Length: 277
Image 1 (cartoon, helix red, strand yellow):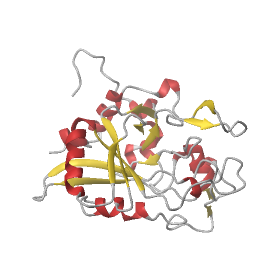
Image 2 (image 1 turned 90 degrees about the horizontal axis):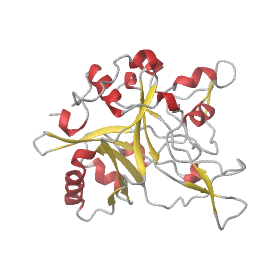
Image 3 (image 1 turned 180 degrees about the vertical axis):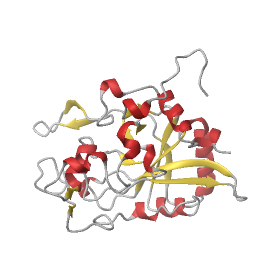
């Protein structure tokens, strides 16, 4: 897995982290259409229905927590779902991390005075973080099962990239319902989930999510490679502000993917079709 001629990554990620890396070994596939959730529900090993109709507030929220939309974060961000596609005999084929992109009309607009502009009738869109080695094979497999389902399946790896944050205090983070910065935001003993999530997201609402496999694995996310924001004062032009990339990644904490590979193997966690038999 690791080249003997290359510099070996350090195994002390827990001490120097949290670290972050772009996962070149993973690609992004988009499922879009009114039957997207139904199509995946019939094929995958996990329940994907929560991604189809996100609740207005997090399950189990109480009076000490608040859930308000922010300009870059929706009222409630559906957590990702980890699932697999198996053969009819139950043999593993592919693993997927499924995300629902934040709908524009579930967030405040850039002024913060009202809901963002978005068509509530737009078909459901889900993004899947998949193994890049078997991407073509995976696409052929899903297209074979699509039949008459109203869902478009396409490779969008030129638009999005997969990232992972790991090590440091993330390995001892709070439960999956919280984020590392939760203790430092909000008033008194309560948790302001809007501010908390806003701090974890970029300016267009894409945010880090707790790794759905194990809390100790840190955070995972899909982020735009490059995107530009339309200038509000000159609607005919686009501003030069790049809003792509992953938030909360310091330049000296971004590392090669080999560091994550070694660290993950030390945790005993397999990933992708090559490692999972």
